[in-house]
Image (cartoon, rainbow, N blue to C red; front, side, top):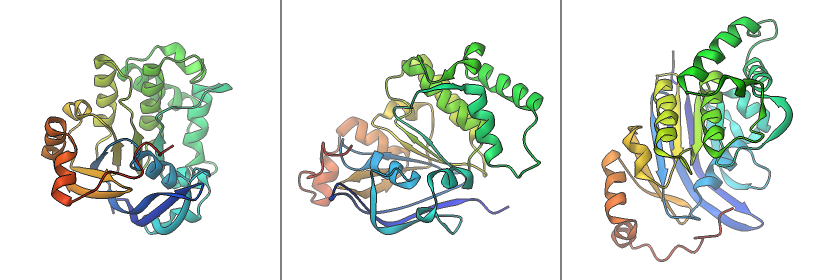
Length: 262
């Protein structure tokens, strides 16, 4: 079976006529974990939102494909059905829709009519995954993210990831605000997903997440572009020395977009 591949080529994205991404090139395939790091406001979250079709972000040029299919021509729900997944930095609360109902609907949206997951199989699988993630079983019947703590929301995003089983997942600061115990559980969920059928792009500021998830590739984003790529050792150097050495090495001036990313 051919591994799925997400390809981003020369992607330019603007918000209210202000260009944020200025030519991003990236390729993520099944079996790979990629990490994007970089200073605040350099386009990391803009990249994830643009890939998933947030209407606030205007793609002015470039392309995004998943297994050769034009992602930018798809509606948001079509991108999810095609196998893309975004774990958001600030997950939305949806009153009136339980976690269980949301998950079952999401799973069935990617299956053919007549091949929907049975209720008993769904419950068994959900219970198993919730136990693995050390989640309170009552969370299955709570409304989606409503009244959840920050840690509960992040675990719930990983539960969705493990249940939906996308081809390519984008995890936008999944480690933000987590204590060390929650961080270990979230990392355990991501590691459990590792396979040739699953590719992952993680956006983070911190090396600490990478103590538990070993990436294949590290990318540094500055001024709306990926300016340097390497292996896990690149993240360790960034933790020790910050970003100034990259700016000096590449002759990068102060980032004009810094602090402007939504």
